[in-house]
Picture 1 (cartoon, rainbow, N blue to C red):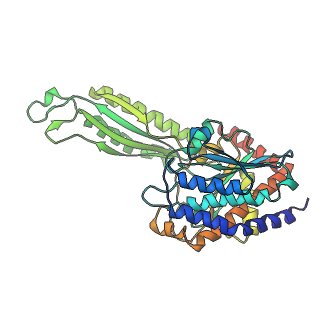
Picture 2 (picture 1 turned 45 degrees about the vertical axis):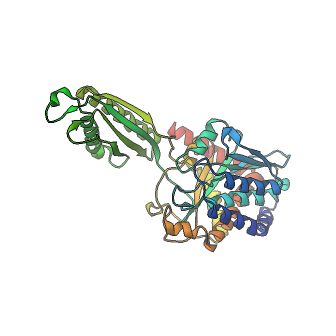
Amino acid sequence: MDINRIKKDVEQSIEEKGEDLWGLARYLWENPEYNFHEFKSSRAIWELLENDGFKVEKEICGLNTAFCGEYDSGKPGPHIGFLAEYDAVPGMGHACGHNLMAAMAVGAGFGVKSVIHRLGGKISVFGTPAEEGGGGKVILLEKGAFQGLDAAMILHSANETVVNDISYSKTDLTVEYHGKSAHGATWPEEGTSALDPLLQLFQYIGGQRLRWNGRGTILGFITNGGKDPIHIPDFCQAKFTVRSFDKRFKEQILKEFLEAGQSLGTMTGTRFRYEWDGYTYEDIRNNSQLEKLLLRNLEDLGERVMPRRKELGIGCTDVGNLTHVIPGLQSYIQVVPGLRGHTKEFEEACGSMSGRRAVLVGAKAMAFTAADLLSSPEAMEKVKQSFAEMKKKYE
């Protein structure tokens, strides 16, 4: 099998669909929608897939804006998934470039579909809503949407092209203390302050920073510290995010944090309670073999691939949860150098011709990588071995 010939055909197919892909990216950019309300966006994506012959299942796993577009060669082979994100940043439009990422995933699907009958296997383009805090992929993962996938890929819009990735494992929660109100100047002995243990909890966090030594952090702010100075507050509340690059260490400091919170409640005579705030996003664990294939394909496309640097920004993503269960990766495609995501300037760039370039390069790179896996059982086996090694290392 001539893989170079196949990749040339893939590239030609994506170029021929270039205007459709850029039209999709622009439409999403002009119509930003947010967590689980991406109705126009999801429809625009799956209609494009259906028009190209993909079998699309809509509203999967009970999510109105999630879908799966599948194309099966009818021949044995791996099942490769491309992940599309299309929710905007609340109040900032597509300042994270998800409009481009959706078009990349669709373009990769188009490219592989054009040659899949020569390769065998199956491809799927997954519409995954609400990455910006809603945990769309977590829900889809828990409900079995990705069952049977051999590998999954997503390319993120960025200011540099980067293959490897790091992200935080994070758990967000709300903490409350309940005490007893009293007039603080006249009858303070009758009250039990809910603010005292909350302030001490912040002091506990500050006292742990040396011990954590950069391996993890807890950040928070007070959302309710009382109503007025003269009354001892009987209810106080704060929100916290617990983060680490290592899931296990995050779980350790979270456990200690909750134990400290409970102990402070006991010592101060207050009632401590907490509740989780949204879904936990796990640290990303890119598959090393997928990274090697993608790196070669990006370089063949003329991309300058940079090492993963802090300057690119470090956040959290629900892609991380997926990489714990399925061989996968999240990598980055440069839109405009020097612009940080989640800014007005980056949002503008994602609607510019620089965004069009990113869409085509990203689609080709993912499609080439999928073609490598579909054409080579050895390559697919290396991916699976790398995944098994990762699981053994961490679990």
